[in-house]
Each structure stands twice: as structure tokens, then as C-alpha cells.
Length: 425
Figure 1 (cartoon, rainbow, N blue to C red):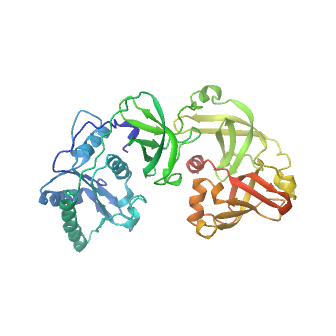
Figure 2: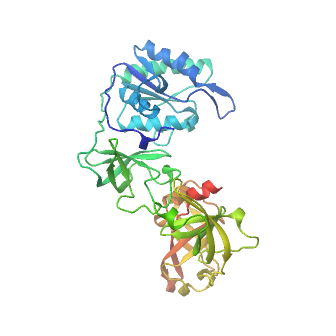
Figure 3: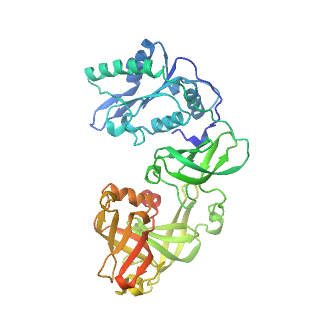
């Protein structure tokens, strides 16, 4: 996969007139309908000849040679292209990454896809050329592609030059998200500086599995640009905050035993606070039979493994202490206090176009507590509006206000460790 953080982002190549880079899946791929499609044949027998007929030269990343690594060769091919043809079919990871790199420097592009569902959300709405293996569809695609090659070539060039910043080190700056994929977001500061926010630069406590769940085009971020040793800049939200993982392996080696509080209980297992904002997971499959561990209880655990690269800590449960009578057991609103953490069960979920809130039932209360969309994490807010919050789903929340006279409790969402849950599952 094209990892942007391993590539020199400095603009050191100029476009070569007539070069058309084709970003597409490689080899034979199985389509959603179960059929197999040969993308190498598509390039060799369809797209390549069409580009040639338009008086230009087709190029793929595997046809560009040089002393650099494969990743840098692809980056060079993107820079050298006058135009780029992107085929989003099959949602190939290499296509998404190379497309984002091309968009980062403002390349003029033409899009292809066999299904509209293959197109990333930030490209939907733009014109693309549909096609299939059927002769009529393929013939139409060839004709449309040739016309677009000639038309797009006449559009004004607005490519951006990525050069190392004059200031060394870290430069705090607010930036706006201009494009986002699962792996990273491209941001632009007011002065035109561009950078890439990777999934490992959002939060020291985790690696974000899907950036589109956190960010959308237009979001404003408060982070910093960091000059890379190889040139170019990346964007980070962790600047100025020490990396807790650097000493974690030493302070919590395998076998280290300690007592800590339970942060949350998920389908994957029990998350226990290890240090700071870092939680470790006791996999559900390893829990002793009959263990009823609740958030807030104390547990005796030992370290099985610390995976610094994945930012994951795996724990083993030895003993658990019954949690003190949880706040949710109290029936009266006055017993709840701001800052108390509860486990709520979804009673009603209303998307933002109809109000934007979730009512949660907590033990010991007859009236649900209110979780407004403005107090939700971006992940939960996305799920709410997508209709993916199900009745009886468990959500960890924290009390933010209590109105005893009206028996009203307002809470905020406590985001779960999405990546750990997904990886463990």
C-alpha cells in the first residue's frame, strides 16, 4: 500500500507533456456480483490504446523505473503526469492512496467506475464514466474517455508545489480538511500549506481505523505541521504531547501485574485503564467463567503483550473486586452528579433531521437520560444519522448536567476504543 508517511512529499518532478497516468487495480479481481475482471487487460487493450488515440502516452506505476523504492517511484509518476485517469472499481486500497496523493497536488483527473458504490464519498457528485464488461458499455466508455481526455487537457493547470517549510521542526496551525479517506486526511492551512494527517497522528491512545468516521471535508482542526527529515510536511494533532508508548513497554513488561479500574465492557472484552488515556483489553474469551466485571470496578490484571506499533495492550484478568454500588442503581435524579459515568441502553434514537438525540435507559431510573447530538463523538453522530444506532445498544456516557426540579439528566458520549474492539473481534 502507498503509505504517504514513507514517501518524500517534496515536489521535485515536473509534468511531462502528454503523460497520462492510469491509477487502477492490478491483475484479476472478483467483482461484487461474483464475476472476475482482468484490470491488466483493461489497461493494455482498452485504456492504453484510447489514450494513445488521443495523442498522449499511457503510464502505470509499474512501468516507471528508477533507483528509488516502489513508493517513491509511484509518487514520481504522479508528479510527471499531465493528466490522471482513476478507476475506483473494486475499492482497491492502492487506488485510494494514489488518488489522494494526486489530489494533494491538484492534478487534473478523469474518473472511471463499474459501480457508483465504489466511489469514495468525497468524490461522489463529480462526473465519472461508468462501464462494465459488456461490449456496448466498454465501447461507450472508450468514446467518453477519449472526449474527456481532450476536454480536460484544455482546462487550466492549478497544480500546487509541495516544498519543505522554511521553519524547521513543528509549526502550530489551524487547517481545514480538503479531502479524506479511510487511511488519512489532507488538510490545508490559510497560507496554502498542505499536509497529510495520518491515522496514527490523531490520538496517542489509539490508531484510527477509519478517518472518514472522524472527519469530513470542511472540518477545522487545531494541530501542527511537522517538517519531515525527507522533506515535505505532515499534519498532526499530537504535537507537544509526549508519546506514552515510548516507555510503556519498560514500565509494563509482559508479566507485570497491577490493579486498575475498569473503563468499559464491550463485546470484545473488558477495557482496563493502564496509564493516562491508554486502556488495555482483557479479551472476552479469556475471562474466567462467571466473571461479572462492571465499569468502575477494580481488577487485578497482568500484561500479556504490549504492541507499540498497533498501540494495543493485551491483559489477563486474575481477580476482580465487586464494583461499589453503581450510581445508576439510585432511582433518584438528585443522586446523580456531574462527572458520573453511566452505562446506558438505547431506548430511542432520532437523527438530526428530526431532532438529533438519543434517549438512554439507565438502571434505577424510570425516565431516560438525554444524549444530544452536539454531545456525541463523531463516530456515534455518524451512526445516528446513518440509522445504525440500534435499540438496546449499550453506550458509555458521562453526566454533564442534572436538573432535579425537572428530573432531567443530560449526558455526553464517551467514545469507545473503536480500533481495539475491531481488531479483537
